[in-house]
Image (tube, rainbow, N blue to C red; front, top):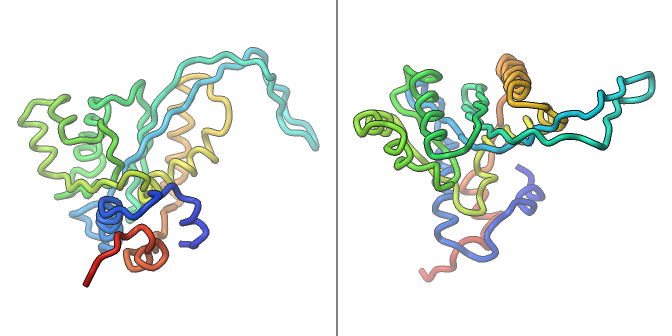
Length: 230
């Protein structure tokens, strides 16, 4: 990880024990060796506004890209959950109407029961958005079902101002550049585009080679650590 990248990230303006505790917790998780029974999954989400063309775009021609009319029609917004298992070279994009606690809960159940049913534990790294809570499972399911899912989860939260610690955010950035950086008219088209991107990227085995450790943080981000007396 390049030092100049660290400087560009959103980090606390002053030393924070809360920040460095959660940062080092996530960084420790990233150093663990591969274990098929304890699957590491990073979760993040974003939105995509649908834009419908008023006039058909002009097709590309030699030496000229496609041209789009400046006039367009807004056609709603969709939410996208990114599930990324870096050690598996796997990701899944779930498109939903909303981003409520129940939407998150259903994505987590899908992760546990459909994507990794054989894993004893799912080590889940995500930010501390209020919907990203075990309480959301009790909002969406019966107490028995919520407890069943929680017993398979090991949750680690990135600190406030520490979204860069979530590898799913890196995948969302790639998705944005390769798939979402154009007008997509509706949710049906978004699902089709996201699935094609996901399939191609999974088949290629693309992943993130994370190398930034707690030892690196104590040197490069030492100003974030509270001072102490020996």
